Length: 328
Image 1 (cartoon, helix red, strand yellow):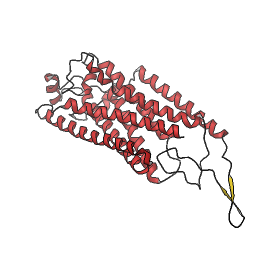
Image 2 (cartoon, helix red, strand yellow; image 1 turned 60 degrees about the horizontal axis):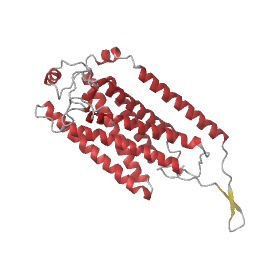
Image 3 (cartoon, rainbow, N blue to C red; image 1 turned 135 degrees about the vertical axis):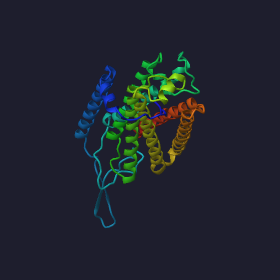
């Protein structure tokens, strides 16, 4: 769920993964549902595209009396520049255009909601201080609500990953500048990595809560904890890195190719990137302080700001995708 601290040796990691290869029934159900939705939406888009016809051309006369044929203008439906008139794409109308955007927006929004369920610690008797503990410790194997939080982490990762894959498949710019296409693809790829690593996080939980249990912290420093601690630290770090890549690239995309009326969105995205970077640096400094035995430095607060910023950013992305649907 979050970036943890120590990285014990890698020896035996492959054996651990093999021992934990059995997936929960929930994983199978979620993945089957996503696969069915993807197949149905792609089938609907293909049938609509096959039955659609290019718009009628309009003719205007030039000064010499000859006729010039011009193609119908294609409205802008994404942040990238208009499609090149030399290679127009066949028009797509109706649900074939809007269904993919709706699916991506809904998946990202639901993923963001599931990713913030750690806030329920305010109402549950977890026994962990939100000021100094890792969010991941809520899902530790020895915690009373560990299974609950691990299940929601898994749901968040699967939903976000599915939405980002949909963005890669359906929301790529058909044409335009090369830079715009690369930024969009790179941003969606970062979100895919974030979602996949978050799902992996839930399958590699901590065995105990080191910031709240001195015995657990001592075992961790001595390397006497399960290898899931090391694997969890890696997957958490990869998740945050993927989120940062997506956040930065999307901010650059809106900055360079957004319309003037998206200036407010541009400022919001840049603000979220700044907050996420500050929270990440704070979290890393607090982790280093804890490992050195100098306290937690507000570790719990820093990490919760970090995760909440990612969730807000996912909601903003879902809103941008939905807004693109209304313009389409």
